Image 1 (cartoon, rainbow, N blue to C red):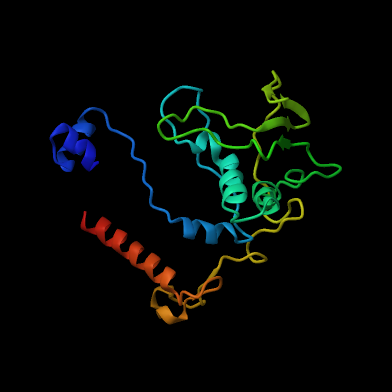
Image 2: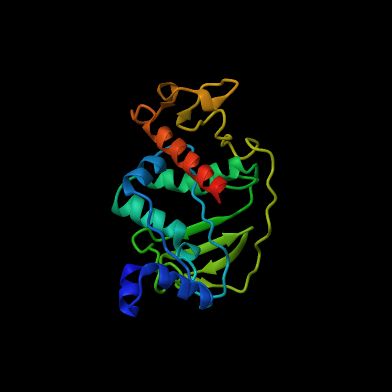
Length: 233
C-alpha cells in the first residue's frame, strides 16, 4: 500500500479513499506463519478445503487457490517441505472429508462406492496459478474419473459432464472416517463450566504443543478487541 501511495504521490489513507471512489480494489493479506500451518497440517483432524469458487477461465483476477489448492498442498507440503507424507495429504482430501460430511459412498476406493478417482504424476504435479496471473490449471493430472465416467484422459479434458451436487449427510456415517468430535478432537480443551469467560487462563490446556494456553489467550484477546471495536462504532 505504501509503495503504491508513494508512486501516486499520496498518503496511504488518501490512496484508499481514491481506490474506493474508483470502484474498490482487492487486497491480498499474508497473515499466516508457515510454522503454524505446519503444526495444524499434521493434526489428524485437519481436512483440506478451499473457499475458492468456480470461475470462467480468464475472467477477473481470482485468488490462485481457485485453481491450485490441492496440487499445491501435495507439491509444497509433501514433496518440497516434507511437512506430511503423501498418504496423510490424500486422506485429508478424500476419506476424512467424506466421512465428516456424511458421504458413505465417497472418499475411498472400495467395492460399492462411487468411482471418483484422480491419477496424477507426482513428479510433475504442481500448481501454476499466481496472484498476478491466476488463470492456469495445474500440471500433472493424467486421468480423472467423476462418478465412474472419464472426465480427463491422458491429461486432456473429455466432453463428459458427470459431476453432481452432493448433499451433506449425518456426520460419522461415512466411509470409515469418523466425525472429528469426539473421536478426533481439537487440540484445545476448554473445561466445562457455567461461564467460560470466567475460566482462568492457566486452566486452558493445549494438547499438541506446550504453549501453556498462550495461543488461547491471544485468540481471546483478539476476540475481545474486535467486540470492543464493534461496540464503539
